[in-house]
Image 1: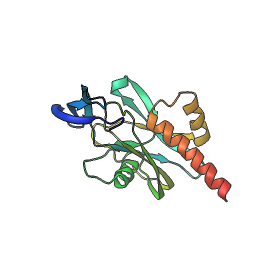
Image 2: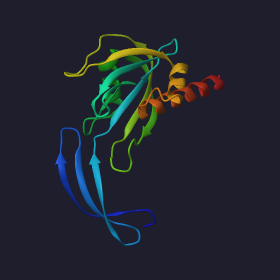
Image 3: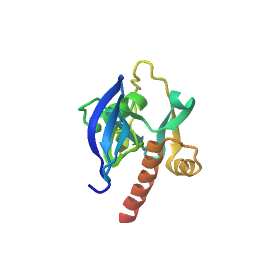
Length: 183
């Protein structure tokens, strides 16, 4: 049981529209007991839409918990039981108006492992076909185009603060470099 914790009991303290909060009692590897506050979240998907000319479509939106507008790649919350691929294609269409010819999985990330069960799946969309946005009610955002190389600089200068955006930008840059060197 090295490095593992055994759940002894749990109580749901909050049942929200998006998240649920549990307080669990756990047994540590040395036999002592402790408590863990855990947020259950259905997970999410983010999509890096890359145009033929090397520009990335970003969205700018107000993020209430941080009290400011952030520049991010399009993303959305999974519905419980929904395929992350289908969610990503839906979010790409809703937020940017785009569909794509190629949709490559970049992997997943765990944004806050200490207290939240959220997993975010990342995709790279290429061969974009532009159309009209289909934003959800109450969703307000602007689309901005930034060259991928400039976005990498922005990540390194902490100008793109969102973790899923940082990781997807850097993974995409490395993937494109690997594809280029393979040809």
